[in-house]
Length: 263
Image (cartoon, rainbow, N blue to C red; front, side, top):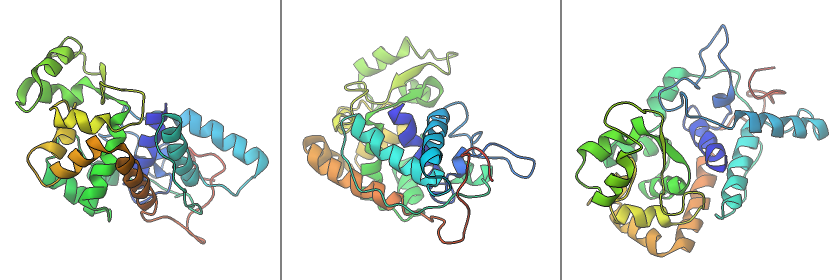
């Protein structure tokens, strides 16, 4: 669940800012973001966020936004999995709408090449180095067969024994929703093994391996693979910066009572 809560925060911030729009269900006036290509059938943790919100409302009604809950839950999830902590900036407010089209346009795709990944993050004010650090979140979590099938059957920059270990669970046809860990080395621990895997051509999805593919980010991947402390420091800093993407403050938006619907 920790990886899922971290992913919710990321997918929230990349679509019109960190405003909890990803949590909104569809209404008669807008189609929400949960059915976007990057989200449909794979986002989890909504019930956990609802439980947290209910507890917070019991003791502090109308003060803490769902957007801030996502930010804090992401940090606490990383810590619970053995990763770094950072100071979460608070004061965000919640959106009153959501955008399916923006979700489809702005969430980076797992089939992107390095240049497209860098552009997608730069569009949100994040540097290439910050993109590499944030991608380290894939040290935990899972991906569906449909996301990595093309990589294991058609790409050459992948370790042969890694391919063999994956094909039984992800045949060339069918079993689209079968899961594999993004980091097969330490799948439920937040560490720097993800970067070592990339150096060993064991990146599960295409966009991950692009970070170590003879391009401009190779050196940073190498640094993180040998220095977990550096990765932890840079990841925390990048998470703070990501959390600053277009927040609603002041009188903008609202503090939702229930995260899945506007007041």
